[in-house]
Image (cartoon, rainbow, N blue to C red; front, side):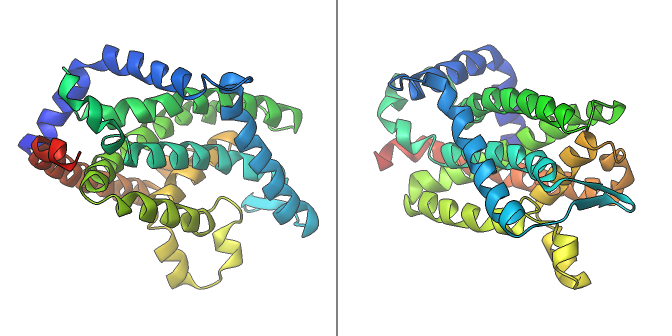
Length: 274
């Protein structure tokens, strides 16, 4: 518990620094490209078009039922989930290698190591916000207009960020000690794309209640469905699914307590892995 409080205090004390470093991270990452940061948005939207062509157009997939009696076009449904998946995937991959890729500068640092995964995640948050705005504009053209349920996006964005930071504390620490962990995470995340409700509605593809329950243990299921509930105005997801909300936050709390504990315990030895 002391480690969790310490890490939290470090984040709050360095909020301004996290903001500055995150923006520098994003700019420096795309410095050598002619189109600059535009590639941060071009790549995911190209992927959306490919998945729509393969899973929606070629297979002639019918509209997706979001609530009984109400369906949305597959491209709109896909867009609602993929923008969060892209945020999660990029932030998790970059966050897992955030510390060991900066071991050379550790001796020159005068800020806590726990903020490194945070500012790396935050750098992807800028991209997510822009993609979110673009997606909302696209949804307007498809007939799904801004509604009161959009307010819950604030909650789900915050929930996503906290979940990813808790996860990054674990993955960045383990990846520093064992470099293969980063490659393993990359492979697992590619699998999770198909085990999460990004490309297809799991409840309609898998008819087994037990398997459906196991699939919903994936925190991404909660976050993605929350986004779609906001976009399509189907209800206050975090209230309607209050049991799922309790499970999600209990899961995140365990992740954070464990992540903070191993990070604080091992970070003094990180330089030994240089």
